[in-house]
Structures are given as C-alpha cells and as structure tokens.
Image 1: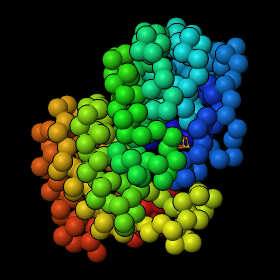
Image 2: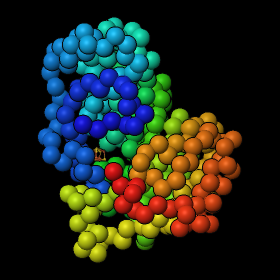
Image 3: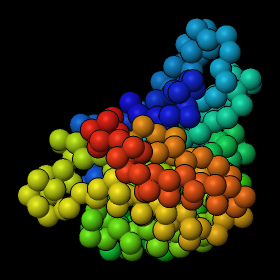
Image 4: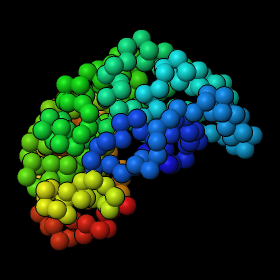
Amino acid sequence: MFRPPCEASSLIVQVTLGCPHNRCVFCGMYKMKKYRVRDPEEVKADLRRARLIYRHVESIFLADGNTIAMNSEKLADIISYARDLFPEAERVSSYGGARFLKGKPVEALRRVREAGLDIIYFGLESGDDEILGRMDKGVDSEGMIEAARRVKEAGIDLSVYILLGLGGEDLWRQHAENTARVLNAMQPQFIRPRTLALLPGIPLYEEAREGRFREASGETIMRELQVMLSSLEIADAWFLTDHISNYVPVYGHLPEDQATMLATVEMALGDPGEYLAPRHLTHL
Ligand code: SF4
C-alpha cells in the first residue's frame, strides 16, 4: 500500500488494486500486484466499517496507484457515498496517471469533481520525451500537458510529481529544461519533486548494474534542481520536496519564494560534503 506523505493521517480506502500501467522501469510499487477494480459494494462496506471505528476523519485517500483509471461514474458513486458518510472530511484525493486521464472527457472528470474529489496526485516524472520513452511511461510530454489541462478544466487540483535523477548523469540537463517547460505549460497547484531511488527489483536498478544507466550523483541532481527551478514560470503553486528521497528540503510558494528556494539549492551545491547526505540515507 502506498500513499503520498501528505496523506499520512488520511483514511485510506482501497478502491482499486495495483496500477493498470505497471510498466515504468523506475517504479517497483505495484510489481507484485495485478490491477483490478474492487466491487463498489465491498468498498462501501469498508467505508461503513471505518465510520464505526473513526470518530473524526480529516481526509480520505483512494488507493491504489491509478484509481482515476476506473469507470468515472462508479468512482463518482463511491466518492459521493464516502462524502455522505464522512461529512467532516476536508479533502478526498487519489493518484491519477496521464495515460488514463488524457482519454477521459472533461465531463467525466467534472462528474468526479462534483462528487467530491479535490485533488489528483499526478506522475509527470519528466517532461523530456526521450526520457519518458526510455522509462516506458506510456505517454509523451504533449499527452502529459493534455491530461493536466483536462484535470484543471474539471476543477480538480493538480499535484505533480517530478523525479529528479531520471535522466541519470547523461541526460540531466534536458530532463531539467523539458520538465520545467512542461510544468510551465501545465501550471499545476502543487509541484512535488522526488529523487530516483534505485532499489533491487526495479528494472532500472538492473540497467544501472549492467552499465546501461548511469545514476546521477547528488551534485548532478542539485544542478538539475537548480536549472529546473530557475526555468519555472509559474503563477501560483506550492513547491514541496516533501519526501524522504530528496537531498535537501526546498519548500515555498511560486513565484514569490523562487529566489529563496534557489538560494537553498545553491548553498547545498556550494558545500556538497555538508549538505548532500550519502545516497543510502536518502533511500527509503
Ligand atoms: S504509472 Fe505510476 S504507479 Fe504505475 S508503474 Fe508508472 S510510476 Fe508506477
């Protein structure tokens, strides 16, 4: 079971299992699960049981990895049911990937929004088409931008994950520049960098062991973050490195905190021995 760190105190409801894509070579989250949508009646029974247990539920997260891919009417029905049972919940959220979102009519997403979905956590990872193709993300940068447009048009907040280090030592600059380009086109409400963690069992780990992928150093990752941050032209978004995989904490609101956040990155670059923790300490 995975959930965003900011959903740590949420009621987590298992609406689907696994990820219907499950091919990204840097991701090992659901490799042991076969994707399936749970029977909505079972999910509603879980919700009723949770209501008996918890007096106050502050927010609800709909697991697993790509719940938004399921039929929108069925999802809206589950969300409405949850909202009726937990009127005190301030937020309902789920993960949602571009491969599935870009094919959804805005009307279907609006229906889910009206039922009570507030935010989608969306894995952009990179805005660079060469990297997206290599990582088998299943969608290119144009598809990413189109999916984000639909989410925002439906009135759902967009929280975008980017994966530092995904270009390795060889493609870091194009990763940084093109990710900033796509984020500028998307104008999400949240940007959340994570750093690539190569762990056994992940296909990219094997590629690195065989010398077909050169893992980026901490210094390269900080340069990537520097180029990315300085290229962002975002009107109104939170930038949050709220994950243990990251080297340094960089938090702020764009655009007014951009210079302060850049200064933090530059401070780390100025003294890598002090600020860039050994890689194994930033792995989960
Ligand atoms: S779409 Fe997301 S959850 Fe699914 S394999 Fe790719 S990174 Fe993992």
